[in-house]
Length: 243
Ligand SMILES: C[S@@+](CC[C@H](N)C(=O)[O-])C[C@H]1O[C@@H](n2cnc3c(N)ncnc32)[C@H](O)[C@@H]1O
Image 1 (cartoon, rainbow, N blue to C red):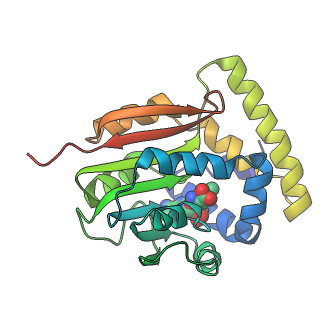
Image 2 (image 1 turned 60 degrees about the vertical axis):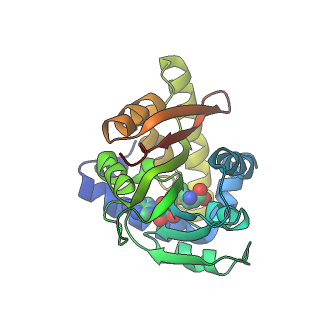
């Protein structure tokens, strides 16, 4: 890893700055790169998340790190009132430009998952895809999700896993680093751009570690749904109902 990319993980502030610059840079190519890197499977994983979410028509849903809005639109299509939140203004401009997927409103909000500009207990469902791995401090982001969820509310999070097996992990990260380097160089003239993915997974606690933190922050019934032989995962969790 280059010293520049290494420095991106020196502190929460450094990671926050790096992530903001990164997604502002790649926003216009984000949909393309996501399809290429997932071999076209990303849409299927997001639909799986929606199936697991079992959206109730009319419920209030929040999609965090919404990006260009795939999951937010699926939630709208399923009949939810949706807020799609992202820290990158350009991502939300691209999301807004896409056609509506349902009749109920979908509101786009620029904001930080670590300090949500939203009132407490406002949502019955929070989703995020490739969101939790990118925040500077996982516990802070989970605490904010807990704050805005109503009692009994659900969280569903899709992300890369950090394989527990050392050999699998090394091969997986080497593969992502190699592919990321080529794509970064071809699309942005900077091979570090998508090497960030492997670098962020290396520092991520992995599916089990995330599940532990979810429980520590108050979630119950935490499930890990493996995708692609466990290389990706969806966490499904809920808050206890009101006492
Ligand atoms: C890999 S993209 C995922 C986009 C979308 N969820 C999807 O699955 O296609 C990560 C997104 O997280 C956003 N992001 C990163 N840090 C954030 C933060 N602290 N708060 C809100 N959004 C953040 C980025 O701007 C980017 O749009």
